[in-house]
Amino acid sequence: MAASINEIQDSLIEEFELFEDWTDKYEYLIDLGKKLPPMSIENKTEEHVIKGCQSKVWLNAILLNGKVVFEADSEAVIVKGLISMLIRVLSNQSPQDILKTDLYFIDAIGMSQHLAQTRSNGLLAMVKQMKNYALAFSAKV
Amino acid sequence: MALPINIEAIRKDFPILDQQVNGKPLIYFDNAATTQKPQTVIDALNHYYQNDNANIHRGIHALAERATSAYENTRKKIAQFINSPDASQVILTSGTTGGINLVAQTFGRAFIQKGDQLLISNLEHHSNIVPWQMIAAEKGAEIKVIPVLDNGELDLEAYKNLLTEKVKLVAVNHVSNAIGTINPIEEMIQLAHQVGAKILIDGAQSVAHFEIDVQALDIDFLAFSAHKLFGPTGVGVLYGKKDLLESMPPYQGGGEMIKEVSFDGTTYNELPYKFEAGTPNIADVIAFGASFDYLASLPKNIIWEQEKALLDYATNKLQAVDGLRIIGQAKQKIAVISFLIDGIHPQDIGVLLDKYGIAIRTGHHCAQPLMKRFDIVGTCRASFAFYNTVDEIDSFVASLQKVVNMLK
Image (cartoon, rainbow over all chains, first blue to last red; front, side):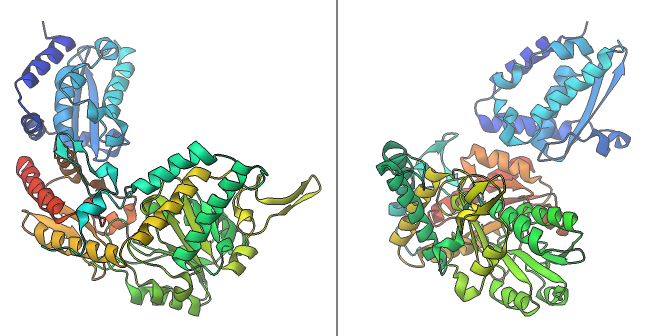
């Protein structure tokens, strides 16, 4: 049985508790960003661009055996790090679970500033778009 | 390095500067977006609401008289600041954007016809592009663009070639918000007038840095914002030549802008009220008046000298940062440095510098056509004001190098 969304969120929170200051956190995030698996070129199209981000962000999802599988990319590495965490939490989960989830880990690991609108870095837009995919797929499951 | 004035004393005039951000002393290098406000401006705003708040111009009671006189006093100070022949040529708007839209909609409605040309430049902020596109589309006029050279200066030869009898209006910024280029507006104004074109100068980025004499420069229209001149947000200025302003139809209809209203027809108020429909932003206009008093209290030319020293110092220091490239190296620049670092997205730099308490701007700076011209998605922009210090630049450069090391 795969880990639930909240189990993954809790383990992320635990990992971040090990960091002593912001530089450790951001170095980790940058590292995650650099390691994010590349998005398939055929999906890196204008139609998959999330609007309203200062850096370009691409997001695509497919439904595989009743689970939503996400892939994404960005020009900015910190955004890629944030995406990487979101994918870890939400990918391979059912549309229903994604729709009802509360992403409390973002606040708990001290990244809620990235949800602020002024950031325009699209974390909010990304979460919304991921839920939109889940909503679209929920009708098919 | 010695700077012309004792900055520590000046910095005390700006209370916001004395604070910690993310546990570090704030370094505010986003002055091109908005400048900070001296205590006297903040006090003027408070004083107005605590003592004088009333609606202006029609009240006959004491508060209304005080508010009206303070409001009109700011208009006089603005007129003096830009050397307008008369205070009635100073129209109070919501900001630079408000002023440009006013001219586009009223001058445009009255004088732009099908087949006419409007000349703008590749350096413009969106607010000096879109209003012209709107009126051009409505009227069937054409927009031509003055190109930008590789160093960030306007191509004046191309400008001369573009200036024909077809051009009704030239709209250019005095200073580029994105890369700091100071345009040779004196020459550009003369050239525009030679073909009978009018010219609008977007002064948003220049008024805080050096004096502008609208008569000496023979400017037709000048628009700028209070908040970039150490004043409050939500206030702007549109200066225009009297005959032009008088020949233009009103902009918005409402109270204040009328002389007499009946259902058979309405007659309009005289300048400047013809263009000031509705209750204006009284409090902020009054507080804006305090900006001019503050500026007048500073030693002459101090702003320009201090900022020039900061620009030279920072430009030189930044050369040491790995992979750094400055976008916009015009010979005449204000204290704005737009830069990129090889292989790093500007947003990543902005996010991490904020962690060091350093405020810069990243992105396209509302100048997407200019970003396209340089084939970049955006830049990091550090913009200095006279209250910034050499120590802050040292800190900024050191933090920037750390950030680059993290991201590489």
